[in-house]
Image (cartoon, rainbow, N blue to C red; front, side):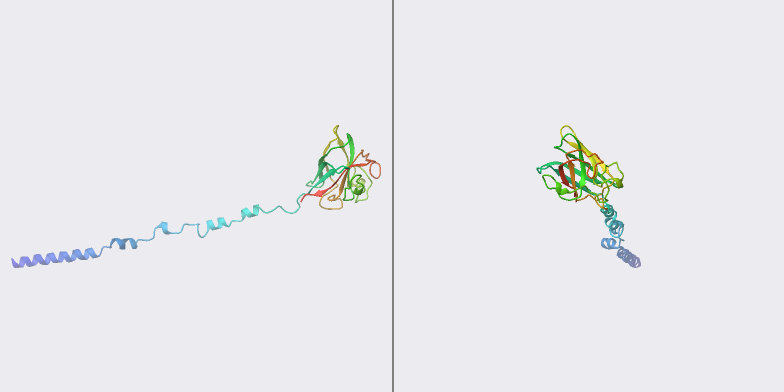
Amino acid sequence: MKMMRLLMMSLLSAGVFASAACSSSQPTDDESVSEQPATEESAPEEGVQGGEMEHAEGDDHGAMAEEPAEDGELMEATARVINGEGEEIGQVMFKEVAGGGVQVSGMVSGLTPGLHGFHVHENTVCEAPDFTSAGGHFNPGSHEHGGPANEHTARHAGDFGNITANEEGVAEFSFVDTMISLSEGENNVAGQAMIVHEGEDDLVSQPTGAAGARAGCAVITLVE
């Protein structure tokens, strides 16, 4: 009986030690958390810091698209027409045309009905009342007077022919003259005076077409 009791106590002691050993080998809750590998959420997102996003922010295609236009922009000019009393009676617009020449368009009022000689003159001053300050026709090539239908060698650079006033005395017009320029060459009319005559230009009489006195004058001024 004594031997049996000692054997039972030995078996119980062995079980207690085994249970304690097994218990000490299991990780605690804190150790379990600290030893887990980093999750994907803690890794840096692709393209945000080192590549695609930074490249997109530094993309220069937009800046290239907004670069100013190249040199060679078509020039424009205006001419404010005044009469002998210094009153404004019209305005003329000049605009270079791609391929050469200048479109001339505008309106002049206060004229007598019918045809009126219309020319660029050699000086740069419009002094009322007679506008003789504008000088003769603009003629850098030293040609004879003619009309817009003549070859460039048979007309002045400022020979625009005639404009036509209606019954109310208003002349509206738009045409392209291929001989003049606003930016280069000897036929550049920028800064020159422009005259509307009281009478008709016959297109043949020398040196001015017998167009009579000067009803209006303007200085051709570049638009900046």
